[in-house]
Image 1 (tube, rainbow, N blue to C red):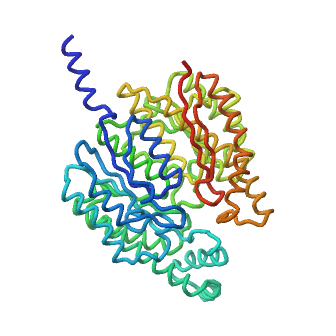
Image 2 (cartoon, rainbow, N blue to C red):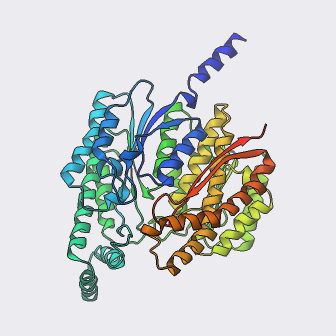
Length: 510
């Protein structure tokens, strides 16, 4: 009897509730700031974030110097890990990383906050995530006139042995880009590459415990990013740190992925996963914004989060609807998912059929999921952007749910809240509301990537279009399971229509 009591006490000492993680997000978008907080809560962990004003907003960069001071001022007592975005710490966020405003010397100075923190608190591991700059500049009204020409130039300029025709095309593309914009873009690329090399060096010398350098949207085989990737890969190998540096497509999911990895390391346990594809043919498909096939991107993300493959005997199953899936294959996948759920296996669904640009096909998958009464029973659902974005989200949520179950924590309310928000966002907003909202704004003569004075109008239209759909999803799928939603906020987090902020709070009815 006493042995059992002591064993229980020992288990309590390792609960995720004892884990404290400081987190510097990539920026203040939902996917990069709110999602990691919600995923952490599913693990039973709270994140400690800097004051909101230090993170910037949209094209207004964050405050790297202020973030360095915040990092230095953290109380190290009971601190399990620091997870930080190097783009935020060096430049002020992802959008700022694509702009030339931050000089290389200043960006390097900001990164010294990592070494200072490690020197003061070597017992606290630092998990950093950075990016290899994508080909396209951020699309805002100021860049719209040349963003396509500059993106195409950056892609073609990576050709190893260009033909005379390609050289002529480069000259034509270059002529469509203002000189200051072109020079600024080239400088930003060169600066970011130097910072990425510095991050590798910080990892080699031990200041960073684990680093990810992911390729922001750039799936083509040519482009200025290709030699950058190759040189970074060679540097990682030459310094002997390949086991501590992760390279993969993706960006926005890295906050969630790295927080999950830090939690797993802190509690000393990782879940296993069984991956089931709608078709093996589809598993070899490739996202146009990524440079690896779907199956390899998924395997890499599983490895990043230290999860293991365990077909038929895993802590959770990840069902993946791939592009090119026929209606029959989709139904067969959902049959397997239904059997898995009814058999008591934690089950997640990633729908990558958006790669087909087939809105009807995407509707059918979730509609069928809801018709069968399965939507509220999933461990996670994601279908919001690139393969890495969606898969990283689903793996982090389902993985954290598995961690909670392993340690006997009841975080179902946190999981159901995030799950409900994913349906409102990835399903209702992305498939129905965003296309209609874009059409309305364009018809009125507004730029959907920079709403400006039309932001309030777009906010009003968003709520009018999305509110009823959100309530229908909750009332039809979650309320019958005994859930109550105590809060529902819907708004555009940035002055553009690309993403929505969904804020809810599900609790059990008494």
